[in-house]
Image (cartoon, rainbow over all chains, first blue to last red; front, side):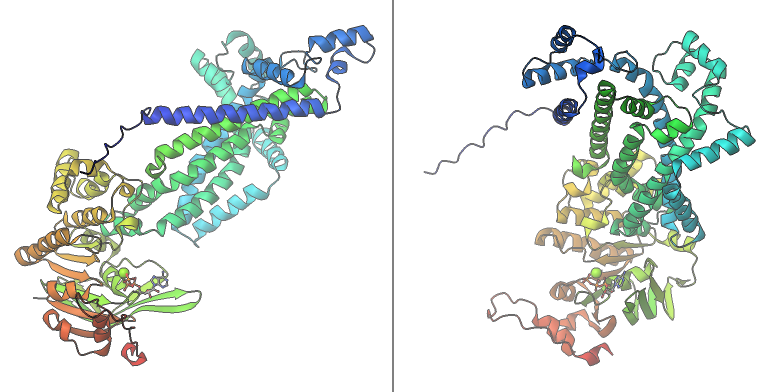
Length: 354
Length: 276
Ligand SMILES: Nc1ncnc2c1ncn2[C@@H]1O[C@H](COP(=O)(O)OP(=O)(O)OP(=O)(O)O)[C@@H](O)[C@H]1O
Ligand SMILES: [Mg+2]
């Protein structure tokens, strides 16, 4: 008699969304740990004595020793790293030598400005770049395609500072259509600091929440130019990628099937093909967003935009290691988080990747 | 009565490497009957079928002395008129369902979009009609299939979905490009009998493209044998097994014979003059 083995009970498995998010969180944690390790090592390797940086050259040996112990520098390396990670997880990135504030506090002040700018720039890049890429792909070789190509090429090759200065000169200096450098006019700037509850640090959102519409409009007139300059670059990238993805999808058999069914051309392109284009495009958009979130130093400098890019650069020139490393950690975390988010979104859009 | 007449059809691709003539002067006419097209891979069967829908993409070009469907001059018709014919009066079962279904759209959405968009049917009515169409091609659990994505279906299942999709609008002419190659024998018989019923009862015209000479010989009324973009022989299907043209005989010799001797399959003879 043959014994038919029972099929084993299926192993217990968590529901898919939980597994997905759990797995993502785990790899996020591992990546951030690696990032902290790198900044930790850099902090030990650079020839800047962290003790001297705080107490100055003229301190006594006793003072030096006391500070060294206070900073935990007498502990073994692995313990120092553990403390560093523990602090970082609790949001303690050390004290800035330059501003004398907590680095995390500084970042909470500077990052929202970058976030606001990068978000609007990316929105601009997507809302203009995707349709432009689609139009170019559906009319290859025509004047529409040429215009999209040339405008895109200019976005690649024009130096940002030149573009920014030119835009400021024309739209602010000559035409007076938009606000100048800074996030607000000087008068509003004071009012914002004092009267508006800063829930997010993003002026457009905070003023809207507070119903301060005059200030909102002013902030908008200030952000238009820098976000357009930044968005131009990302638009150039997004439209070029959209065009090439779209050309590829339009060559697929399922497109012919849609036409066989008598679907109108707009539906073939903007529904059948674009849904497939979105799959690789998500990664492209996330990448260009992440790039902008690091803070574009040039744009921030030209438009006197108090963002993360200028914060880190200023810290670098002042040899303010805690601020540089803290800023780097934040940029890294933003980058990794965005990557994970785009990964999740990707799985949502592409049923084959689930 | 003639439903479709094609005279001297040519499909040319202007590629960088030069001209590729995929179809070179094909003529045939079709009544409310089953016309088979056979021929080796690359002989131009698919391109001939697509030409009728005018769905050859650039750099491909269609030329014909005449291409007339039910009194409509297909060569002169506007793109708008063509769109009204496609998926309504002329449909085409696409060759490879693996690539011919939209990978990121649910089967249900792909089946119902024609009904919803063109016929303005409600979501519910369209859904019922789609489920009915799936049941007709022997799909069990059609509700589940409606919710599936193409990559979740087997080859045979995809093929049946494709057939269902193209039969939903009740076309007057169906071009079926290898519609049953991935189906097992019983399902294949079932699908063929559906197609047969449509030709017989509704007077649909059927162009049946296949590699399977035995199947075409049994199922069709007439057969075109294609080689390098030309029709080398046109004959009654019942005479296919006794074809005299050496190319057709070559194709027949390639068929494995059940219970026959196990000598290696003979190579296919290709004489240049058949292509002239
Ligand atoms: N985009 C293209 N550019 C150049 N040549 C092409 C293109 N598309 C098809 N062809 C040519 O058209 C010819 C006929 O192709 P077709 O798809 O009609 O063959 P088929 O008989 O359907 O073959 P199969 O049995 O493999 O499906 C092929 O030889 C191919 O090289
Ligand atoms: Mg083919």
